Image (cartoon, rainbow, N blue to C red; front, side, top):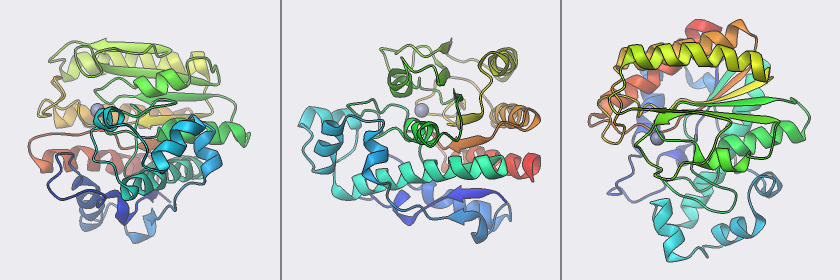
Amino acid sequence: MLKIAWSEIYAHPLPEHHRFPMIKYELLPEQLMYEGTITEANLFQPSPLEEPYITNTHDATYWHRLKHQQLSQAEIRRTGFPMSEQLVLREITIMHGTVQAALFALQYGVAFNIAGGTHHAFTNRGEGFCLLNDIAIAANYLLEKELVKQILVVDLDVHQGNGTAQIFRNNPAVFTFSMHGRKNYPAHKEQSDVDIPLEDGTDDNTYLSILQEVLPRLLEQVRPQCIFFQSGVDVLSTDKLGRLGLSLKGCKERDRFVLNLCKQNHIPVALSMGGGYSEKIRDIIEAHANTYRLAQEIFF
Ligand SMILES: [Zn+2]
């Protein structure tokens, strides 16, 4: 059974006019249900994550200040969000969604969160629409509960997973891999265990051949018992922020390759949504929907 975390609060934390595109959080589950890829039964609703699992990854003082709306104006500006209690509630609900998706992945082989991939959240600060780091929190959860010993983060969002890299810099139990636009945000890159910076305009063939060369080798080297896949679709040529040149088909082949590899090697994979900022909402939804269609095709 394909399990997918989703909550009403994912889509409605901000005033309508805000520039961060929230509508995809509402349209994607609608599309997947409309076309019959999933039914209501596939969705589960996470509750807000309990504090100890947040401070297991994040600095307690930072979390306290975030929770009590005490971030400075400069800190708030870096997040890109207008800060509110509702936004923090959304964030900790997303965190629980990825934790539960990871647990379902261990059970069923694959599971999703229709949000998350908040890879720009550091131990003690947020930036780029990320307040807390869902993949880091979920990875630490699995390690603390001793459900797995070795984790691999596969971050294929067009932006570097700088927060995730920082959080796990000195933790060999979590191997971080990020493939991203070299000239893209963040200007200052952190050091992941493996970084692959790509040039502007990188096309399907170049992208896929690099991924096909690197990822199988990493699986052999790292031998992960669980993979977190940040499957952002801002790699599309149509993306307003992306700078890369992938087609919808290329993006789908990317996801097919990763999911097939996980399935063949019996490695549970938990997917977080990541970015997607194409001009047309239908390109964003189509690219994200492909990932879910593939999971159903490959795993069930
Ligand atoms: Zn991104």
